[in-house]
Image (cartoon, rainbow, N blue to C red; front, side, top):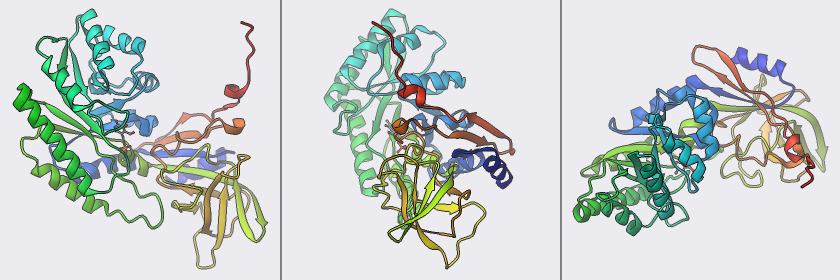
Length: 394
Ligand SMILES: Cc1ncc(COP(=O)(O)O)c(C=O)c1O
């Protein structure tokens, strides 16, 4: 890995991402070993589409939330049997294309009665039987009330074009409270019990987004081992479990990613030492980072930290005073040309930035496979075309 990084630093004038697939696979194995054996995994593609194909054989499913994600998975030739077509807005023409294609075998979530009617109408039109997972709301705009799901379940005998296989639920990310997991899972099993008692409906599966947390910053205190052990105990204690599929993005993808950015200027303003980089918040955003108050895990490639380290504020190259990646962090003496490495950047960091401000380029992306093979999976991407007016007289 170190050889690859040295080569990439030499070859790249600008920032880049590297995803370590060996680390990714070890992470999935760790999650599997920390959870009960009967648990299956569904990877939420939004966390990082670039690694999806690499883990096709390591997870049971992929959760896909937009036409773009569906196209990416199709381009990657991911087996449609593994796809869960999710999303609060399901573009009717895109869903129709999927239903019209007999070879498409994915499951659809249902987030509203309108989606229910859409899927039912399409299944009948194309003479298909579609597997569906109604999504229970967490008191937000997502999913549906219990009464709507009960209605769908109660109609299942007369509306056979849809086969209700269970329920989907997700209530948020970076969840650390075992009490909350217990409350949610008990509530979900009580709901499934009611569906069985009142509608003779036996859910085959529960697809549950756990929102497992990632420790991004110095001082984060979550004891992951304890959390996963406690979560497993809660699952084990649930009576009459259906098939349990955990929908996870962040906790699977975060640890495999690193973001590298070059120091391009150094200055002292009013006694504060600044490192300016060729990256910035259009390239990397950590969940929970606010005004750069928290300290992600950052190092300088090829330089060791010592007790003489100074405090630096690391900024990006956008013309915005908010473009601070980290404030007052201890780093070895910095020089122009040094490369900073930001850890745990494999999930969402790359896509949640404000990519279009200033029309700067987006970083190249690389994958390193377990066998040491290095792939570039995205060239540096110019955004200027997206901000450049193209006049078309109408
Ligand atoms: C429905 C659903 N499932 C799963 C996830 C993945 O969550 P996380 O990345 O916290 O695991 C999300 C994230 O937004 C989601 O909306």
